[in-house]
Length: 315
Ligand code: SF4
Picture 1 (cartoon, rainbow, N blue to C red):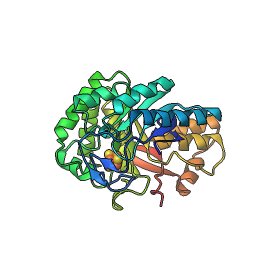
Picture 2 (cartoon, protein in one colour):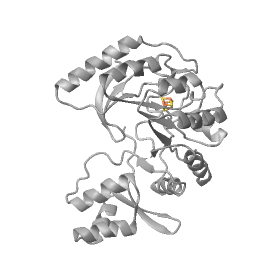
Picture 3 (cartoon, helix red, strand yellow):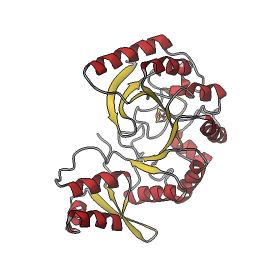
């Protein structure tokens, strides 16, 4: 199926997905990939579907959804592989723009060093680029790229795209325990990202069963450190860890506020206290959230922060 959803997405609101790549062709074989291992590791762009077919399929789905009164915020290229491997991506974006809905592309950015790929993406309104590593060996271990890809060239390509793109550019960094979560690597990633024109930098962890079962999320303390380092470099980080999903099983606005906020931005102790004061509640609220395993206290450079407890990947 080429068009699917829409599904609610934290980043994009109601997002109607476009699957323009057959499963699973990618330039990477990331250890954390939720689609499983890459079946065809490739860097050659090719035609997969007729652009008109993609357009008709999406148009049909949009009409069905809109008839039911559901608003679609984005048409998003989020395929079972790397969307820029599609030689017709630019044409498809051009056609889809006629539907009057914003277009998003989530890419691993490995082909942005190619001028035609950057050109294809120019028509999009929102593009997310993946930067999981700054060191070449870490990059190889986490993203397991096609042998003909050069990490330096990829980083240069992203920087170039950032300078040319007129839409909204965001980054995503998936952290895997023991691979790309050291302080030095995080600093390097943050330094690099700070040179781009980014409206947000998402920090993610594997939340669905990964390609390699050993690819685990780092602990909350490391995640908090990543967040703080990104902030120190002037980025606008947000955590996207799956912890923001689901009901909390607690009542009361202040509890919801603390859990919802700390799932995205770790909260300083003072900010938590402020919220409690405003609601006329005591610190026992925080204590019971910690005891219930919903909230975690973490330290960074001598300061105390509270963040939503990470969930284990869905089975
Ligand atoms: S780039 Fe995306 S689709 Fe490709 S292997 Fe990595 S996570 Fe999977």
